[in-house]
Length: 328
Ligand code: PBG
Image 1 (cartoon, protein in one colour):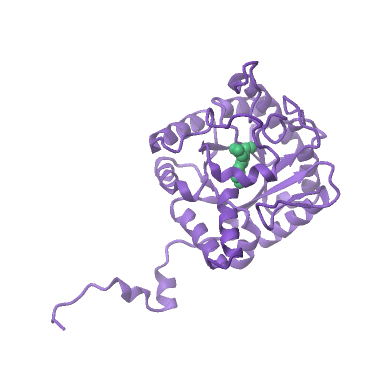
Image 2 (cartoon, rainbow, N blue to C red):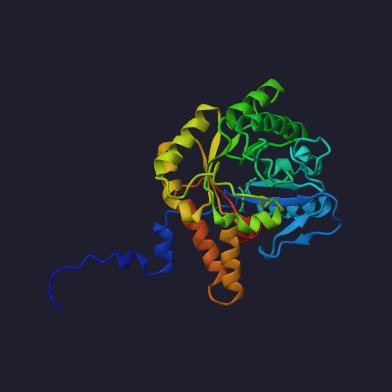
C-alpha cells in the first residue's frame, strides 16, 4: 500500500442510506401517463399478443382500468380509440358518437378527470382503412394540408367530449396551429395541446399497430415521421415550430433509443417535456423477462429512471399503473 490518498467515489455508494441521500432522480406516480386502448363493438377485453398484459378495452373494462390507474396515483391517462368500421377519411375520429368520444364521456362522468389528466391522442391512423395518419392524395401520398382540417375537427370533437389535453401524433406540418386555431374558435382557448413534436419513423411502434389495428396497408410512415439518422438539430427545429404554433408541452418518441434527443430538447425549452416509452420498448422487456433472461421489475424501474434522468417531466408508459403502485 502506497501512502497517497485515493479518491474513492465508491464511499458514497456503500450503504442504502448513503445511496438514498445522494440520489438525484426519483420517479413519482404523477410523472406517469397510462396509454389505454378502447375498441368499439367488442363485449370482452381483447388481449394484444405482442404486448402481454395490455388489452383492447370495452367501454366497461376501460372504466375499471382508468379507476385503477387513477387510484394508483398516475398523473394522466391517454386514450386511443379503435372504431368498428374504418374508412378513407377516418370518420370515426371526430364522430360525436365515436368510440373515444363515448369512452371519454364515461370517464368524465365517473369523475376520473379530478384525479388524473384525461388526454386524447389526436390522429387518424386508428380510424383510416389505409392505416396512414392523414388523408391520401390520388397518388397515394399523405396530403398534409387536407389532413389539417380533419385534425381541427377531431380536436373540437375531443374537446366537446371532455378531453383535458389533446395530443396530436400525426406529424403533419402545421398541425399544432390548425388545432390551436380550431380549439380557440370553438370556445376552448384553455385546452392545452401536448404536441408529439419529435416522433421518429420507428420499428419500435410494431406492437402498437397490432393494438390499434393501424399498420399501414401500403408503404410506411417515413415520409412524415423523422429519420433516426438525422441529427438532433432537426428535432429542435420541430420543437421550435410546435412551440411557435402554440404547443403547451412537447413530446419525444420513442424514449430509450432517443435519450440524446430527449436531453437536448429538455435543455432547449422551458415547457414541460414528455417522453413516450413505446410499445416495442415494452414488448422487448416483457419478452426477455418471460424467458427469465432479465429481472423484469428492476429493468422496468431502470428504464423509467433513465428516461426521467435524461430530462422527461412526464413519461407515457404501459407500466404506469404497476409502477405507480410500486412507488407508493
Ligand atoms: C399514431 C401513434 C402511434 C403511436 C402512438 N400514436 C403509431 C405510429 O405512429 O405508427 C405508437 C405508440 C407505441 O408504439 O406505443 N397515432
